[in-house]
Length: 271
Image (cartoon, rainbow, N blue to C red):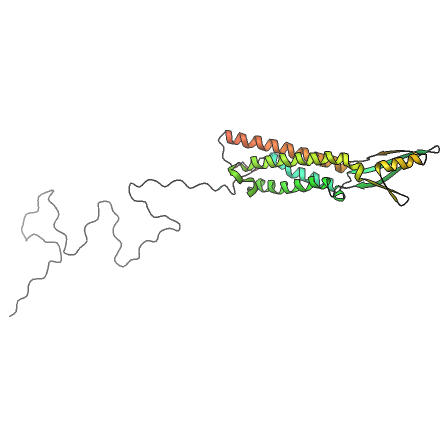
């Protein structure tokens, strides 16, 4: 009869029947043959054989090794957080004034003619900034372009032209408003002196300049007095330029106060 070697033990070795129990504190019996080493104390129980590995949460980063330094904090996204202070609303208001002034006569000359014992009054066509097409039209265009960018700040978006150079977007918008307001005011002042050379009077099918019309009336034996008449559009454009300058100064001061106080770059929504 052929004999075979005994099979390897498949379980933990058990003491023979009737043997005394092992003393307290003695090491546990050896693990069964082929079994994995025991898990450290406190580890969760192993998953059953054949179960899929646990899925990590969406966007959950892998755990860092023990003792590794903590990752640096992520930079805050301020592209949608930058809001201008309430004083920035002066810029869109200034642009609105300039737009209204563009379609309202800047000058509407009036003439008083005296001669032959009679005095007559005449009103001529108005001079509009969009008909002028020179300095008078520059102020409304600049203010409207500026207002579009400032409205972006008011709704929480920082336009690229206000975020260049690493400066505060509100301070950059304030400087732009200050410059545009000053340029608009200079244009309006220059237009005041140029109006006489641009304004034309039509009388009897003949076009006269301001000075030539007075001279022609004098040669005919009449006294002619000319005035600029209502200047609603002109003064609206002046008000728009002044509002832009005031808004620029206030926005710069607001940005400096926020930076000095260590406040974040986001202002609370206006209103």
